[in-house]
Structure formats: C-alpha cells, structure tokens
Length: 470
Ligand SMILES: Nc1nc2c(ncn2[C@@H]2O[C@H](COP(=O)(O)OP(=O)(O)OP(=O)(O)O)[C@@H](O)[C@H]2O)c(=O)[nH]1
Image (tube, rainbow, N blue to C red):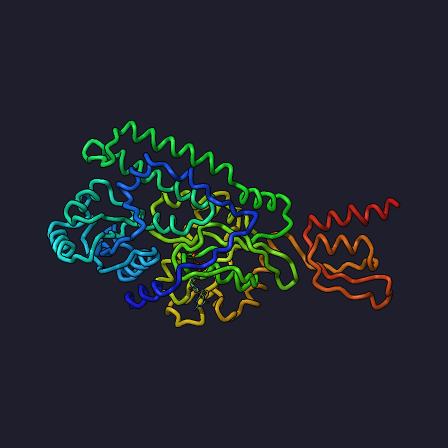
C-alpha cells in the first residue's frame, strides 16, 4: 500500500502551470535571496541540494506512555513521511521503516541497541545517502551524533518540509515567507548548543548572530513591500462588497480541485503533491442566487510541523478569521482522516481574532467520495467529489445560506421603473437573481435580488428618502 502510494505520486508530472492572479503575482528578484554568507550557514544544517537524496525514512513510534500518539497509527505516519520525500523532485525513498521505541531518547533519539542496528543498515546499503527521521526537530547534537554514526546527512521534518516549501514557492511573497521561516530554526539549532557542538560554518557565535539578524531585517523589509495581496483582502473586507469563502484543509485533500470545480476556473491546476499551494490565491465564483463570492485557496495543513515553520504561514491564514464562510475540505478516502480532520479543527481554533460563533461558519465536506472511503463517518460532513461533481450544486447552496447569514444578506423583490436609475443601481450593487416585467404595469420591472442590510440602507437613502423629500 505504501509502495503504491509512493510510486503513484512519483508518476505525476511536477511540471504544471500554477495560477497566481496577475495583480497578486510579483516576480522574485533573486538578489534578496542571494546571500553567500548565509547560504553556507544554511547549507551546513539544511543539506539543501538540487540533486536530491536517496533516503532511508525512519518513523519513530513510542509504544506507550505520555509520548504515545493517539488518533493515528505508526504505518500511517510513515506513509505521510514517505509522501513528503516523494513530493520533492529528484529525491527518493530507498527504504522505510517504523522504529518502535519506549521513549524518544534525549541524546541520540534511539536506544543503544537500535542505534547499532540502524548504523549497520545504513552503512551497508550504498544506495542510502541520507536518513530522514520523521520527528519535528532534531537538536544539533542529535543531528551531528547521528551523522557521525551513519556517515550520511540526517534530516528531520523541518528540513524536509522547508525543501518542499522552497520548491513550491512561486511568488516573491511565498519565497520571502519560506526564507523567514527557516531563520528561527537555524538560530535555535546553531546558537543553543554552541558551547558543546562545532558550528561547522567556521563562524563565531557573534558573527553568526549578526548574519542571521541582518538577513531577517532585509527579508522583513522586502516583505513589507509586497503586501499587495493582503491590501486587496483588507480593502475588500472594509467595503464588504464580495463575500469571502476561505477554503482550508489538510494538504492534498482537494482544496484547489474543489475551487476549480466551483468556479470553473480552468487555469487552476490541482497536483497530487503535498503543499502544492503556498501562495494564497483568490478566485471568483457565483452562488446559485448569482451572488458573487471570492474563494481563498490556502496553504494546506499538516500535523507535526515545527511551530517556527507554521508561524509564518499562520499569517497567511489570518484572513480565515474574517471570512464569511469557511469550507473545510477533508479527504474521505484517506485512512488517517480522523487525525487530519482533528488537526485542521485545532489549528482553526488557534487562529487569532476569531469572531464569536466562528464554528457556525465552517462547512465541512468529505471530498473524494468517488473513491473507496475509510469506514469512519461524521454525520455533519457532506460527501462530495471535485472530480465528478457529486453534490457540488448542493454544496453551493449550503455555502450560500452560511454567507447570507453571516453577511446579513437577504432575498428581496424590488418593483422599480424599467431602465431607471434604481434598476441600474440594483444591477450594479447587488446580485440580481431574477428579473421580470410587472404583469400589472409594463413601465415597472420586478427584480429579485440578494441584498445586504448596508445596501438596503444605501438604497433607502439614495432613492426612497430623496423621493419622499422631493
Ligand atoms: N479521486 C479524486 N481525486 C481528487 C478529488 N479531488 C482532488 N483529487 C486529487 O487529489 C490531489 C490533490 O488535489 P489538490 O486540489 O491539489 O489538493 P490541495 O488540498 O489543494 O493540495 P495542497 O495544495 O497540497 O494542500 C490531486 O491529484 C487531485 O486530482 C476527488 O474528488 N476525487
């Protein structure tokens, strides 16, 4: 099962067009990222390479006690870890195993006996030129000890995921986020243990601190310059013209596919790849009443990601807090559905500035219902399929009812003069669902519209009050 998953994701072409709305796209100028001093430091700990690595993937698994994980199985975690590696172009998995432990050893991760076994395995197998230990972080001393023992570079989840982020970041905004995300990791790793462990970069801790600080300042300045996207959202939020629907979910659940199906936006290119979307993008769609909405495609979630990596990306989720509806996409065919679903809910609840009754805005759908499903069911989740369109029309109705409620919109019928300024205003400012001539008076038209309280107020002051005053 694991093998077939890995080979499937390998077969999928990685060369695909990523759509970034024109106004939000900013080509990266590479000078900002080109910093030789910093690059040598980063290389010494991240082992980034363009030629890739052939990895042995080890999934440590605590059998009991407080470190034991609930809601998942070691095999599923191993599957996710191998899928992470397979996401990287020119990296591959040459071996994979779950390593049962009584607890995670502070110094060397594994106990003495297990370590000896692994050392023999790695040294004997010439195909292995790196080991991925699927834990959030390894300390510098753990990394160095294991690298000395195995004689190949050792990676943790941070170093693998940061590679994926680097490969997938398209816009300058995303590239800056990734560059900022790795700084705390490098700082913690290199500066927390300098007394016992060689830095490897040949720099004094002070020089290292200065280099990291200078880079952070430079990246943050650049980041400020490229906030176009956030301004667009902010502006929309203030004007509250077009409702926002944030689409969130575990990575690879089908967020982009659902948006593509709901908007008919042909350029969107879903990928069978983890963290394919790193740039938060906006896509316009129409609800059944012809009300326009903006769908926001967001960065996929994944559990066991280091906090420093998430922090930068949580900023991209800020707008979720003021979205009018939140569409939570789950992959109903995934064996680890329960853990993935829980993780997304927990992350959502941890977001800043959440409005009261935030959960009332969340519509949870169980995507990929065209595939064999895991046997766990959640009563309220709507089974849909982005691939064959199952229940998408019904989903749009649900989104509409949530949006209508949160934005105080309602359906109203206006009888206005045919071709008059009231009719023009209603066509411009509201969503007109139906229009028909008044059967009793052909000079008038009946417009059925979706209109917000604010718009009703405006209509009154523009037309009704004026008419009464006149
Ligand atoms: N069978 C089936 N496959 C689907 C469905 N929806 C999406 N997929 C596939 O699932 C994979 C991931 O889809 P995406 O839409 O890129 O997923 P995502 O959640 O946006 O992924 P990230 O950007 O990595 O977080 C792609 O190979 C899709 O073709 C579905 O309803 N049925």
